Every structure is written in structure tokens, then in C-alpha cells.
Image 1 (cartoon, helix red, strand yellow):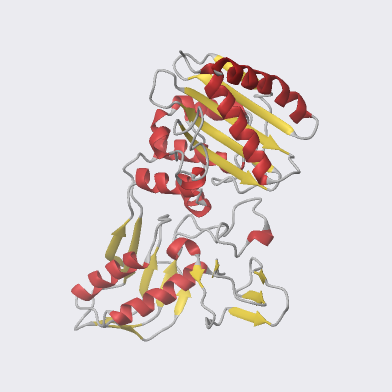
Image 2 (cartoon, one colour):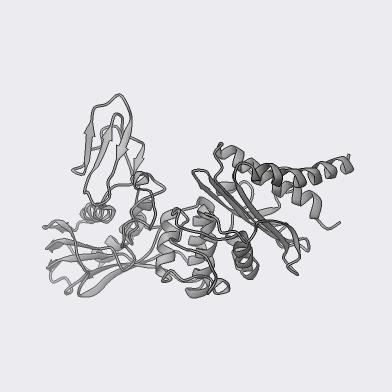
Length: 399
């Protein structure tokens, strides 16, 4: 029985590449972690669109330049200290690159201000998105993805991932509803509003996301007994810092972002590193247009992905395993079942998978699979990746 299964996977390995080449582009590389021995390969040097496997480069570069314990700060500024409970002037909320900014963080800032005696602000709430908030979308991001939860505006003040939950009775000045038999949402970059036709979606990545955060912060301040006389507007933070909230560590942020394939988080992290490449790829022929892989301008090879993974064992603990994140329903059984840590990648007609097979064992292998131009379903693309990994687990495990 075992010999029959092994024969099947050997035949699959031989036939699949020939069949795949007729319809789409397939690249892959599998090597031993310890000595780099090549076990399986096909067009591994070809540059392909990587989709979210690009996040591997972003994570590696961030760990190199910032360190695993790096934290991002969200701060409140003012021109002076409150006097007799009043601040005469503007209150400034400034973001850095915390992709996990939540209402709990804003509550923390409000409590700090309240403890300093602040009760009234005789000025505006000035919103400073930070140094990494321009442009609002990554290069090559599809305009018709704007408004979707996976493609929010890039800002250092993205509350709850830059997404607003909508209820049937939700109203806001920026939300414009139009009757229609079809349900659709339009959010055009550069405009201040969103148009929803038909029923409201469950959630929406709104325009001017940082202003939405500022509006919510004003509401939270009021709940803490701090009232603001002015309006919410964009500007630059000035004065001195009155309150600070720090993010979780970069290691913790990366673990969550890689599991969820969080485009906002990885784009902010990418920008906060200056957009650098991992050292092992410096000077190499490739194109890194963004940090998330949402851009179709990105081009990288399976070989380059494998090189980064081999040179960065610190990536292993931050990549999801079977049953986690984007691998929730994958590699639960079979020869590779429970024995893989990898990053997925998915765009229209594009798929990718890269990571470690049998991680932290003497059998450990590093692999990358890139599929471009596949016109059939996402399920079929993922099945092809699963089949390759399963065949490798069957054939190349040391016995």
C-alpha cells in the first residue's frame, strides 16, 4: 500500500508540471534547510506575481531593521498643559504605524488625559496620520478594491483595521445611499464619500479613515468627561506629548498579520522600514512595489522566496500552521498534515504558497510555489499547491 502511494505521487510530480505548463505559469522550488540541496524545481528563477507571499519579504526586512521587540506609538499632543481643567488650543492625535489600533487604545489615551485633569478643549481635534500615510493606497492597488476590508486606506490612525461596521440604520455624512435592485459599493480615491447602492454591506473601509478615527476619539473623550468645542480636521501635531499608547511588539503584530494576511498591517510595516529589502536580496533583480502583495507590480522568483526563508529561521514562529489563519482548512491530514508553516498568496488568477515543510525537525525543507495566469477557480489553484506539497512530503521525507 505504501509503495503504491509513493508511486502515485512520483507519477503526479512527473506529469503535473507538463500538464500545468499548457495553461498557466507554474514555478516552484524545494530545498533541504540544512544544506540547500535542491529536491524539486521548475522555472524557479522566473519572476512571477507573488500576491501575499510578498509579505515574507516585508516581515524579514522588518525583523532585520526594526527588531522583533519594536513597538509603534500613538500619541496625543497639545501646545501646553491643561490649566484648571481647560486646554486653550487644539488637541492633536498622531499615529505612527500601529496596525492594531483599537477603541481600547483610544480609551487608554482618554484615561491618561482625564488623569491630568483635562475636562474641556477649547480648540479642534487635529488628526496627524504620521509619516507613513501617503499615498493612501499602495502602488498598483486596484481602485475597485477600495472600500473592501482587505484594501483600506493606509494610515497610522486606522481604527479597527480601517474598517467600520455598518448596521441597517447606520448614518454618516460621508455615506451616500442610493436605491437599487443590485447591491454595490463605490469608493473613489480622492473623494470624501462612499456610495452604497441597495443594501448596506456588513462593513466598509471608509474614505478619510483617519478622520473617522478622530471623530470616534472625540466621542470617547466625551464619555470620559472631556468635551471638545471645535471640529475634527487634518493637520500636523504640535506642542508636547500629553499621552502615549504603545502597540504590541513587532513579533506579535507580525504573527497576527501573517496569519490573517493583513494588507494594512504589512503595508504600514513595509513603509516604516523605508521599504527596504531583506539583506539577502539586496541588489537582486526583482520588483517590490508594496509590502502586502496586493499590488500586481510586484515580481519575485521562487528561488528568492526560498533564499529569504532559509536565511530567516525567525520567520518560522510567525507563519501560520494548519488550522490557523489562511491555512485554517488546509494540511489538516495526509503526509503534510500538521507539518507545515507557510504563507499563502491569492489574487485573481494568481496563487502562491511558501514556507517550511517538517519545520524544526531534521527533515525540514523550504519551498515556494508561484502560480500565475491560472484562469480556473481559486480552489483549483490551492488544490494544485496542496498536491505538490503532499507529494513532496511523501517522496522526500528522510526515512
